[in-house]
Image (cartoon, rainbow, N blue to C red):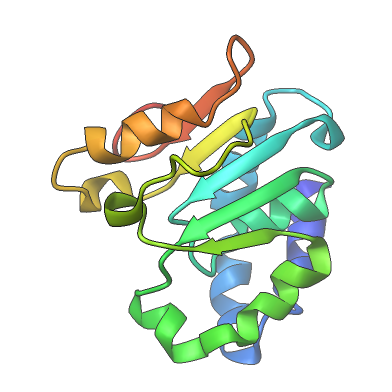
Length: 154
């Protein structure tokens, strides 16, 4: 089910990104299952930090999760495709906050999330605590799961 939804979503990305998004479906489906942890997606809110133009936040929203994507979109792929990719995010209701979380922080976000993710972002931080501490502050007390890869919080 998750893979089928992700495929449908990937196919409405800008044409130059479709193949990459389709190829990333197994990884994204795995990460979504980790985030869900068996819960009903409609009951989950997720904040994806550093997710860029990837399929994770859009896939979460397509499944019914409340999704916020926070990224500075300063990577080469984001610069190449520009804002055209956000048509997909808008269609599924992903809220997009463009900012550098290291320099601008997350303290002004009052919402709390069931799941806070940062995939392949922690290694970019000179000191991991610069991202981990603000991310943990966004999580709901007693009802959260922080998912991270390569920084190893899965």
